Image (tube, rainbow, N blue to C red):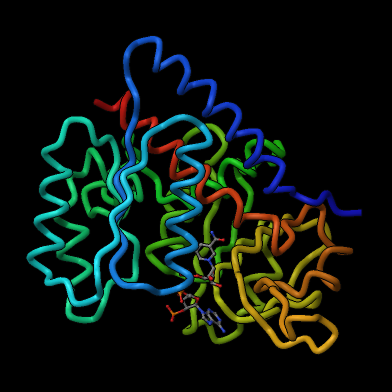
Length: 290
Ligand code: NAP
């Protein structure tokens, strides 16, 4: 039977650890503050920002939440970021993506002070990750790494196959796990849509990380016995047996892959809950980096 990697449980443990760290910082007169900018009223983004805000309040750090109408100009967004860059009370800055089409996302991400870039998307921090220097690792890959560490999954010399090469998940997790350092040191392959036979690569994986966005793409025939599966995908599919008419599935066909796996993350309840916990971990790290 595969070990079920319980992201919900681990995220709750980390929340308690972070709350304890915040108390120690408070004794030194430090109260971290996360500044969150939401542009427009995309329902999913509103939920994400609300959850991030709540996490901050729960563990006792400040959260400055600013929501602007979708008609805001690029210059106005840049001015808000600039104000937070120069505000010594702001420890971390997060601009919720996606931004409306008339605002250049790259320009906005580049304008964030890399020392406050707790999402880890600024090219300076991406470069530091590639170079193996201290940095802010993007939150979802950091969450995956934390799960692998806490479940004591040895990666040294293991073949990790990452399916997906996004800047948010695929590339950073590959760059993290290939580093010559404890809890990494893996042999890493990155796959994408140009792979002529995806199964050829996934079948060789000791650890398979799927960050694709295609419901249940990876089947039992695509993995070997004993594989560790990290399923990042969050896909909503129709299911008439549910009251809502839909349900969430990952990029891996859980029911048929789990019996072959030695460990696997469920969807939901695997990688997902880790992301916000890692955002706040990065925010506290910003105090130490200063
Ligand atoms: P993305 O930017 O759309 O990237 C998807 C990647 O998968 C691309 O590199 C694409 O290849 C590759 N791909 C797509 N179809 C493929 C196929 N049939 N065979 C091989 N490769 C294929 O997605 P993302 O932002 O990384 O997100 C991936 C999934 O993770 C989504 O379901 C998303 O909702 C989920 N996610 C979850 C969390 C969380 O739980 N906290 C966070 C982030 C993302 P090309 O580059 O060639 O197009």
